[in-house]
Amino acid sequence: MTQAKILISGATGNVGSQLVRRLSALNTPFKALVRSSDNLELLKCLPQAEIIIGDLADEPKLLDAMQGIEKAFLLTNSSEHAEQLQLNFVYAAHRSGIKHLVKLSQFAANENSPVRFLRYHARVENKVKELGLSYTFLRPNLYMQGLIAFKDYIKKDGKFYASVGNAAISAVDIRDIAAVAAKALTETGHENKIYNITGKDAITHYQMADVFSRVLGKKIMFIDVTPDQMEEAIRAAGFPEWQVKGLIEDYAHYARGEAAEVYDTVSDVTNMAPTGFEQFVNDYKELFK
Image (tube, rainbow, N blue to C red; front, top):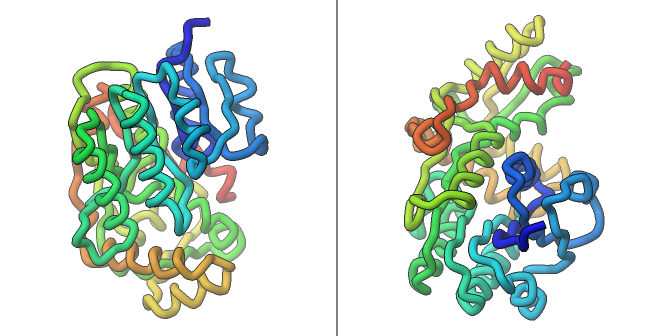
């Protein structure tokens, strides 16, 4: 097999697993940098994948993994150390002479944002620019697949909850994010671009509930709760304190109507229409039944 010129971090996560499937379908060899030997069933089934066990906190391992690499995809799991781990990756990429870095960021990333996750993504983006690396920043909006976290409530109670009011959000399917990432990693013309990645429509959580009702054939209700109620619920669910505060800030951002803009990025980059919310629910309906 041709030597891999692409390095993927976060290959076992939601977006990463979709991305490696796409690279495999294109018969594109790649290295997958993963933290442990757990959850590798998918990668082991892909002949194009070279699995490397390593941690983004381990600079020598990072530099070794980047030998011969031309393009890299930067994605870390959500943690209170995510910013530092991403910066470690960026510094290693710069030292290794990687030609192009594709970073999964977040819609509305800004160093002055009141949302901590948007601040950290912007700081990493700005470091990439400061070091002079060629980049593509992918800034997706709220993931449709994030609603899978409510599947038990939807199945048992016919309800799901959030502190978001009647704000419209141009939520996006992670499969579309992966499709854009695959293009940026395997084609030219995406250098030094910032891609806002959204669905084709901005819809409210009440409208999402209507779609669930129609597809599942039973009444599903969205219940708007106060920020304090949402904070209490996610803390009771066992989320760590840094993530509790970050999620509350995220949803306040959505509730302010700051995530309603729709972009044509998916169709412009991939020549495919973005996945609609109804299609998402149809594709995942067995999880919600």
